Length: 418
Ligand SMILES: *Cc1c(COP(=O)(O)O)cnc(C)c1O
Image 1 (cartoon, helix red, strand yellow):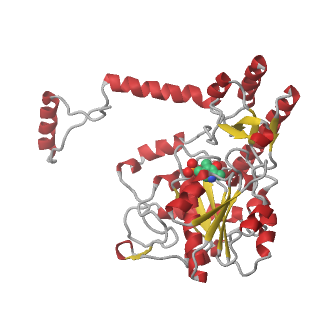
Image 2 (cartoon, rainbow, N blue to C red; image 1 turned 30 degrees about the vertical axis):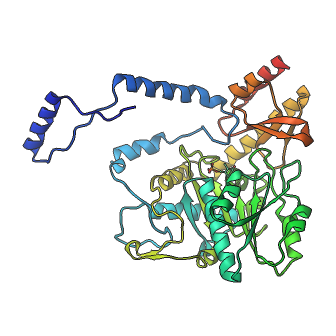
């Protein structure tokens, strides 16, 4: 598709004349998309608008309210500059390049205490995604352990955890032990114990809400196993992409509080619970972990650059801060409660219907015997398979936009096909 098209000669001549009059140098002139191109774009926009209400299978929040942000962004002309958060939001220098680091820092400072970090021992960044957050957790964890022990760690993660963790172990060349999970999607403590490598440090990745079943690793039970081997140095990273967003706003808030269940770093998505309109996330850790990294002092950025990426989005922190200010803890609490209530309602309705379904504690993800293909397609339901639960499964992730009337439509479709 061509979006950029040179203007006609006549128009270009006019612009040239105008440029001469206003004393500016003349660059290439550009135009908006052609009418055919515009039609393709409009069709795309219409498709998004009509389908989002029934997008049940993946953990995105389509209840997005960034209209006022975009209005400010346009009106203030902020959109006319390429602002870049290359740099450390905890080491901001006056007069540096154009950045939004102080807003990024405000986002990290807002979220830190929700996961039990004290503001005087917190470091973090706004990431590009949940995967990017896990990438930092795994990288920081392995470098921290190597520095402490002079040995390469072994990474342990359950086979129900998000695949990004396995991919990242591969990318970062870290020895990986995949620990079997139970039928609820939780790492089995005895299986971890039988696989522990005694003379190497352990990089634990705990899944806080497995992708399909919404299982949560029992950190206390797994930590009890690790405590039996005091010679094994341990780093704990929590992959809480989806659940980490809403759990602080529920009765289960202690599950993601490192003061209650110790961990060293956590990754949370920005576009799952928090309603960002593009992939983003947060990565949080302690100053101690940050100070035990390969710093790579970069003179032209005037500081150490422990994070993996150089250029990072300045727009994501601005949007996240806008969202935080708009809803605050009160708004997030209402949204989190609503999601869990509707998930429980859906599970109860499926039970009433006699359609096999499961809902883990703390979870907004109802999983159930897979419906016929037409329903799977209409609601974009992700597939899974577990012989222990009768075979083919699907799930619905009850996000903010998954409303009761839409869930009722799904139930009606299901009972009609039963
Ligand atoms: C979604 C998810 C990820 C991946 O996050 P992206 O933002 O898609 O990269 C990782 N872990 C869990 C538990 C997730 O739910």
